[in-house]
Every structure is written in structure tokens, then in C-alpha cells.
Amino acid sequence: MTRPLTGLLLGLLILTAGCATPPSDPAARAEFEATNDPLEPMNRQIFDFNQFLDRILLKPVAQGYRAVVPEIGRNAIRHFLDNLGEPVVLANDLLQGDLTRANLTAGRFLMNSTFGAAGLADLATDAGAAPQSGDFGQTLYTWGFEDGPYLVLPVFGPSDVRDAIGLGVDDEMDPFGWLAFVHGYSGITYGRWALWGIDERSRLIDTLDELQRTSVDFYAQMRSLWRQHRASVLRKGAPGPMPGLDTLYRDPAAAPTQTLTKFEPSAALSR
Image (cartoon, rainbow, N blue to C red; front, side, top):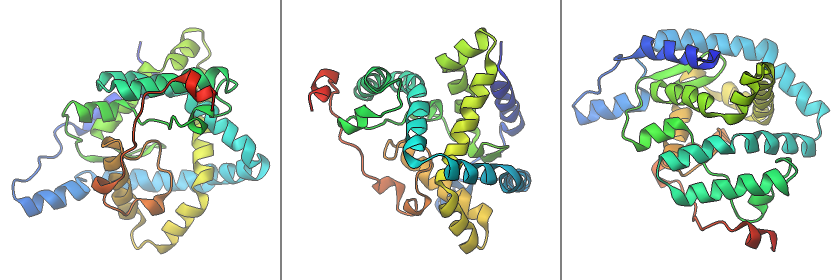
């Protein structure tokens, strides 16, 4: 049985399949890859809708959340939500054949779920096991699939065809989502993602305000920044969601790669 998010993304896949073919000329190919936005009129309409929704709902809620919940509480909530996502990261690490990252992710989940009070504390990072990037869009990239045209998804924001498919597959792989769905508690899953979105938006209030204030074309600027950031994530140089947009101007190919070592929970706890 397909859940609502997956059905929406499959519909978008059918809509956008075969939209763009890369040109053969090197200069034209470089420009194409920088934007790859044949659906720009539709994307701009969705972007405007997302901006309207953000202006009347998401940003005010995020501002209230930041005002009411102290930083230590917001960090605990983020750690908890990130920990719930670790099984999906682990699955993608394994699908990519990256056993070193899989070992780190499994160790992080085990440590934070137990000694970290169900993930409210990120003891694994403190012990030297940094969060790993791992989503099915990244897995498809590792397997050699092209990204497809740029997409702006309703509510979810910047993406492309490959990552939209990946988002749907990650949703299906999420064991906690399935547990809630099977037992009739899908509302918990929706609440979880809503809380994640509010927390993420609260962390980007000042940065996005400044970016919007200084951008001649906010849509094009966001498209450029997202593509730079995503290129770095695909090369496993910058795990996690868009952290600080001001750090995304540098060449993604030059992003530092984490030095990975085998994670031993017993050794980490002794530090």
C-alpha cells in the first residue's frame, strides 16, 4: 500500500519524465547542468506558493518556536529527530556498499538510542562519530542515475527528479513511519515531519531573510545554492540538510571529505 507522500512523488515523476536531454556542446552542457530547469514556469509558480505559505504560516510558527523553546530544548529535539532518521541513512549506506559509513551510522544509532536517551543527546558526535549523509537520491547517484530536471516541490522545496524519487523511497524505507502507519498512528509521522520542518526553518530565519533581501532573483539564487549544496552532499562532503547557506558558494568539488574511521561504541564511551 502506497503512502500519500510516495504517491505524490510518483505522480511528479510521471509528469517530468523525459523533460530534458543534455546538449553535446561543452559550453552549452555546462550551462545546462548549472540550471537544468525546463519546468521553470511551473517551478516558479510552486516557489511563489511555497513563499506565500512560508510568509503566512511556516515562518511565524518557526519564530514562535524559537522564541518559546530554549536553544537547549531545540537542540535536543533536533537530535531526537535526526536519530529517528538514522535507520534510513544506514540502509542507504549499505545500498551504496559503503561499509565504513554504515558502521559509523549503526554505531551512532546504537549509542544515541541508549546512552543518549533515545537520541535527545548526540553523544556519538561528541565521541568523534560525525553524522553521515545517506538518502536514496544519493544512492541513485552512486548507481549512476542522472539527476533529471530541477524541481520545486510543494512545501518540500528545491529538488530534482532523482531526489524526488529518492524522497519517496526513503519514506517507504523508514521503519518508524511504517510502525506508525501499520498501527494506525500516521498522524505521529506527519507531526514528526512538521516538527522537523519547523525546527529547520527556525534555524534559517536570519540567513534566508538576508538572502532574500540581497537577491535580485531569489528563485534563481535558491536554485543555484541548492544545486551547489546537493552536489557536495552527493560526493559525501557535506552531510545533512542545508546548514548555512552562506557556506555554499565555494566549489562543491573542493568540499572537504570527512576522515572515516571504524566506530567502536565501547571505545567512544571511554572518552
